[in-house]
Amino acid sequence: MSIQLAPSILSADFARLGEAVAAVERGGADLIHVDVMDGHFVPNITIGPPVVKSLKRVATVPLDVHLMITDADKYIGPFAEAGASMISVHVEVLPHLHRTIHAIKALGVKAGVVMNPSTPVASIGEIAAEVDFALVMSVNPGFGGQSFIPRSESKVAEVRALLDKAGNAAASIEIDGGIDLTTVGRVVRAGARMLVAGNAIFGAPDPERAARDLKAAAIAALA
Ligand code: DX5
Ligand code: ZN
Image 1 (cartoon, rainbow, N blue to C red):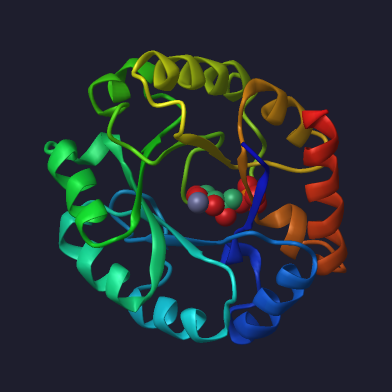
Image 2: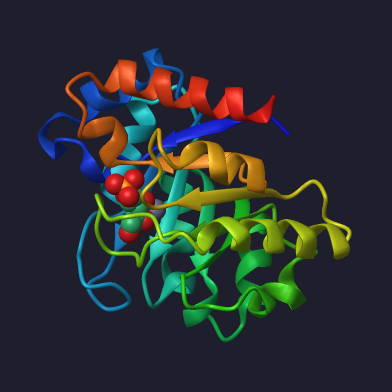
């Protein structure tokens, strides 16, 4: 499974999103990670389907929509219609996760399950065979620019083992939070292949170059 870099626009200038997307695409972005927050599940509010629809017009790579919202079931349809190619939902808020994952897939969208740092790996055991990807949060969701939680490294390896045991070797592991040049190698070696990075890319003076450097470091860690 190859590396996919997913710059998170959460740390970009929201008045210039088109330019931000173009810059990281030039730098080798494989996905654009879109953080959706509702002020309930996480203590911050960001964007909704209209912004995804606008991003879809300018992005040439798939949009990876991370729903940090309490009522994900209600918004899967609108985000799919707006142009999401991937939608991930949190295990902590969905009592009928099996139904939700299949509802995402039925819309022709790749379905991912997300775990917060305090959520045990075993919580995704019953859904591991069904998902297209699993997202390990390596910070508590809500804000960009937080520090990587070291335990996430071994957690990635545990999730990889769980997916494999469930017969889902095709499912990829995404990691989100505090990924930069100092942490990327460790998480890649643990098994992460989709790498979200916000501050390390859009907080840098040259996001195109930061994306290129981060992806190169990730690929180097694979060897
Ligand atoms: C955190 C979001 C992340 C965030 C990552 O709630 O889910 O996608 O943008 O930002 P960095 O890379 O700055 O930790
Ligand atoms: Zn995210």
